[in-house]
Length: 292
Image (cartoon, rainbow, N blue to C red; front, side, top):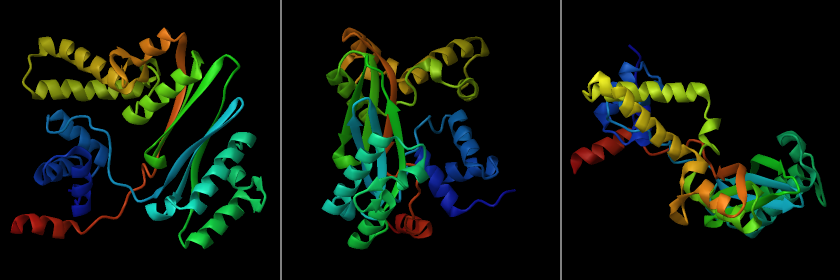
């Protein structure tokens, strides 16, 4: 039997919201595999398909720059939000996003080598690190090129904690900005349900079937139940099918169509997503709860 650590239990609890014992039992059953443990909890009806929202280590800012038919969305990190809100950091990310949008480098190495007034983007990052006293780094970026009949939309939320960049076929910039605001707020995974990979769809269906059976539902109605739940799940993760954040009476696709357009693509960066952060001692946390 795999040895389950307190840190693993806490991670699963943070991801699913379940109790400590449920989390530990699921990890034991899954032999320590975190993804399988989440599925175990879902199949038993203990936890639903919640998105991972664990706290993150990196601070920093996301930014979008648009120059003609090219747009870039970037994430630059620092160690604290204090530095991320400082003028040297804001100047740096503005310079980086502009230069990347203008020159469209192929990868991170090429981006760091782009020429600036002081040398290269990498040189500017080093200087900002020296000025602020914190490690600063360009984590990622995405460059999108649009066609003449397409429109960019950009939205920055909460001082740069979330950035969204959208491309619409047709419509106009105002509509594209509205959709970018929706993307920042709701965090879809795909433009449409047609983009969901077959293996992802099959996996979700398998989990939903087991969940329904474990709820004691008769097999003859499980298929219909699963079909309904699968459609609901697809609508939740697909931008086109989501209720538009500014008007819940229509979906995003209906809103864009009413403006003479169609969603082509989107990119959403949330600062620090996917970077795990060191948290307090888990044993101390449990003991504090016991003593209350």
